[in-house]
Length: 286
Ligand code: HEM
View 1 (tube, rainbow, N blue to C red):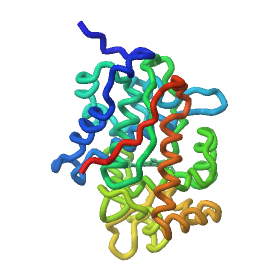
View 2 (cartoon, helix red, strand yellow; view 1 turned 180 degrees about the vertical axis):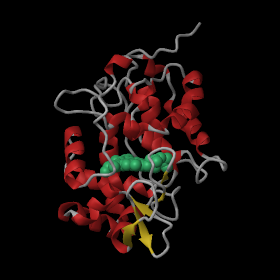
View 3 (cartoon, helix red, strand yellow; view 1 turned 180 degrees about the horizontal axis):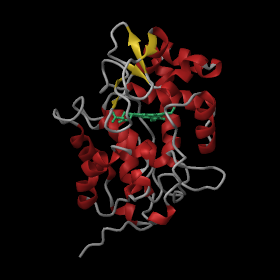
């Protein structure tokens, strides 16, 4: 039978335009969350990639160790099995795509199909890692912490303050789930649209501690409908992060351009691409 393993060259047999379309067809589902798997696909792509450590050159999307235990069970990855399960039929349909390519491409589809910028993406990740190469449980950010922690986590990936401030704008999408992270609620009223609303909500609202028995988080005053994580507030209180947040709140095009660059770079951390790997700029479907 056909081997489901991807090898170094097997991506050459895959028509990624077709994969893009097939992922896009998986997004909409009225019975799931706010009606789209886009946000959780973006989160899967980010958590598959954000484990990269520039110092040891370990982690990152190549090898897709996020699908193995113990990494799959790290607290930060709670709920991402839902996204992996949704994508699994495409791994069957396109056995030559690697999991790393599939998960990162799903993030690109999520951003673009929800109205975000075009994200340059290359294939070439290989399923060449085992569960022994799972990353330690300290690579992804802890939402309970502030600017120092956020910097330490993203500097380990090799990002600077501007890139960090741009990346977190993905918190325009989706929501927190008390059953996953423990936190609860969406960041704004249109969680299935990629916008600069993370920054506008963050800077224009009054954020007060949520009164509940769950983890410490903020809600907007007076409605209490929207939320911010303690780590999100760092982009309002830290003066350098705030300067970028203000720029992105005022200029959605600037946000889109910077997000697209930083997100593309995030998805490529630690991946060595073949010199002739094509760079795709997929067109959003309509
Ligand atoms: C959701 C933390 C950065 C994309 C979440 C959740 C937490 C969190 C706690 C809720 C998970 C749940 O309960 O389902 C953080 C922290 C960050 C950070 C502490 C760094 C300061 C990022 C970045 C991206 C991103 C860089 C992408 C570029 C998302 C998305 C969701 C999400 C799209 C919504 C997922 C859904 O609706 O299922 N994040 N995150 N986050 N995060 Fe982040």
